[in-house]
Length: 114
Length: 109
Image (cartoon, rainbow over all chains, first blue to last red; front, side, top):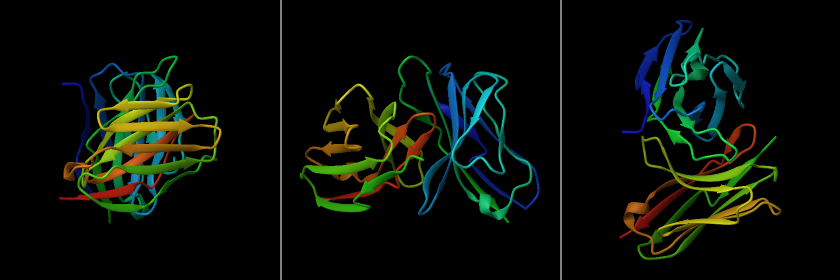
């Protein structure tokens, strides 16, 4: 089954404790992206990657890191999480080509930083 | 900086009605406009994607239009059903992707 998976689905942590949220897709998509969703603010893009070893900042990259060492994986790293990073996080992927294709989203990771 | 606005924020209709959801964007140089559906506590499901060179896309009871010159897109839902109840999001993509805040649709039986 073609899908985007995220782990963990739920995470409660404390301020300053480094964490990684994994994202993996099995569709051989070149493009992958991370978003956060907050009430009243909607979905905002954090980082995106057009291909392996290519990453770019989205709308709200501060406090986050990403890496794209393999095509299928795009982990989101919070080096020193803070309470304002409490949010619902989504990973997405799509084919990258001469035309843009629809994005497929993962199920989401609900993060709480105490 | 791209701004995407969706009106109305919430909409409640009786079953069977045809309805239109609106999306406006400030940067007309988008590469595409995508409509998504989000159910409570769930991820996003892509409904329709309109490339910048296209005017509309159709899938079943859904029809989405794009007018880049006016910075507007609409999602038309025909013969609405209770199962259509969800939040509908539009997003414009250029170098990054910008989402509207969504329209929460309730279709009453």
